[in-house]
Length: 344
Image 1 (cartoon, rainbow, N blue to C red):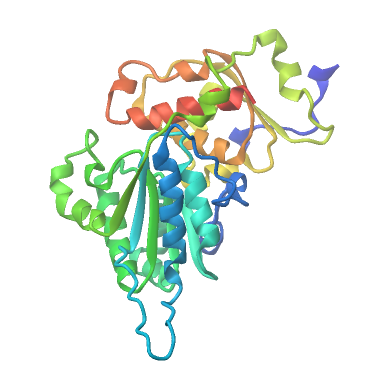
Image 2 (image 1 turned 120 degrees about the vertical axis):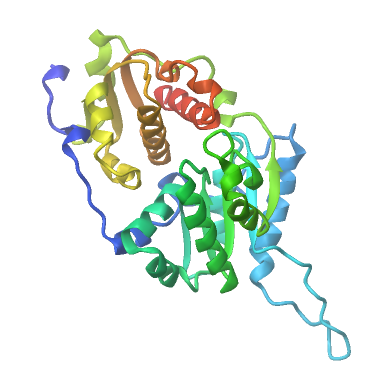
């Protein structure tokens, strides 16, 4: 019977991954979903011309490392147009910002270039210390930061100063966010207290606005799928090879475990899991737990692991007035991704 099968079944709550500083640096590459992303494979929405324009601007940015070419013995070299050291992709979730960021990373010259989430970079600073992080990253051609979202005022100063020091040495920066750089922190903490740091960061970027509709909702409509309890076992194992690894966890147990693991290690929690099972999903009332779930779902989505869940629909998990608060965009991004993952 399918329900008797235990081979390949794991519990995420049994895992407590540890990463060395060297492993953290080595992991700063695009996630598997974008391992082959390119400007050619990006599919802009024809209803939003800004997406096509963004591709062209990023192509130019990717080519800006090349030296200016002379026009012959008697001609003068053409002066390259002034380019800011950073480019910032601002737009809603699901418009392909991460795809474009990964495409830029692939197009940029190496060998030293890095791609990671905001949390991964701040975690690296925590592991190495600020000065050692600067030393480790100095000399990189490009640093890509996905989902530049500030949840802590201390992160504002650490990241802006880190980027400022690296820019001075010739490193270029590319970032994505749902919030323009001069508005980071609004609704979350007293952004005015850190205006100097935020403005310094903003001055380093050319901001590209990318409008559009969430591509995950173009082909998937409705809500996250709820699996009835009596169908959970079969749905969890359906279509998997006999030796495939899948997880089976109680929602409350998973949330408690996430509190003991730094978000930078959430990808390691997932490991080689090919399907993720959650029993007893319910509405969250703690914003701290909700933000942990957002960070976890981001990594599940990066790994493209389908979810089978019982209880409340995952797109209804953020309770109270969470969707109306300062983290609204983060929650909506997670909702979009959970709908896609339960429909996978």
